[in-house]
Image 1 (cartoon, rainbow, N blue to C red):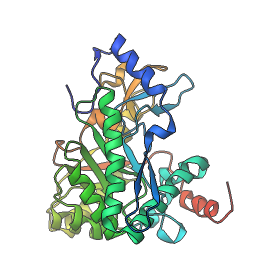
Image 2 (image 1 turned 90 degrees about the vertical axis):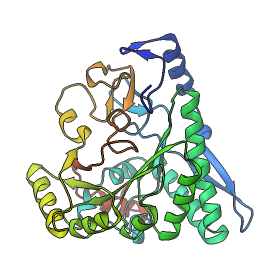
Image 3 (image 1 turned 90 degrees about the horizontal axis):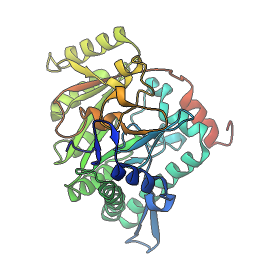
Length: 338
C-alpha cells in the first residue's frame, strides 16, 4: 500500500469497506480532532485543535457544491502574519501579503478563533509549564491525528506542521522537535521562514523540513538551507520569477543550490480540467476525481515533500493572489473589517 493512502479502493472503484470509511469520517465531531494536556506549571487543561486541510489530508471529499474538504485532520495550524498583529510568523516578508491562509482567516471567524486558541495554548505551555508541557501538547495533537488516520486504514500516518502560521520562537521549535521524535511512526513535513529554527529541526528523524524562499529573502534562505543540508521551498509569481529566484539562490551559495521540482497542485493540475487542483481521486489519479466522490489530498498523492520523497527543492506557483491578505487579517484582529 502507498504511504498515506487508505486501503479498500482498487482502480478507483468504491468498495463497501471504502464507503464505510467515508461514512465514519463524515460522522466525526469537532471534539474528535481536539486533545488536551495538563500544564505542569499551573495545572490547567490546555486544548489543541487539529486542522482539516484537504490538500494535505489522506482522505477528502469533493462535494457536489464544488467544495473540497478533508475528512480526516492531519495538520497543525497557528495564525498567519507577523507577531505584532497576533500572528506566528517572525520571518514574514512583503511577499507574504498574498498569503492564502490569511485570506481564509479573514473569511472564516471560526477558523481564526481555532488558530488563536492553538497559539494561546502553546504560548501558555511554554511560559508556564516549559518546553516539556508544550511538547506534550503537540505530541498529543499528532497522536490524535495518527489514531484517526489508522482507524481509516492509513498504513503510514502523515502530519503537516503549519498549514497556517509558522514557528514563532526557538523554544517552540524545541518543543516541536521533541514531539516529532516522540512520534517516529508518523511522517512529518514542514516549511518555515523562521531561519533561526532551521538549525534546531534540520536532520530530525521523521521530519522533512523546507526553508521557504521568496523574492525578499531568497539569498538568506538559500544560505541557511545549504548550511544545514535541507531543501528550499520557493514561492514564485510566474515562470520568469521562478527562474530569477533559482538564479539568485545559486549565486548566493556559489552554485550549491540545484534546480527544483514544481508542485503539481500549483502548476499542471491547475490546468488539467479535472477539478480542484489540491485534491486527486481515491486511487491517486487526477482523472478519477469525481464531484460528490472520495478524494486524497494532493500532497499525499504527490509525496515529494514528505519523508521518502525526492531530495529536491520545490517551487510553489501563486494563483489568485490577494495582495492585501495580511492587511485584512490585521484589521480583523483590531476589530476592523470582518
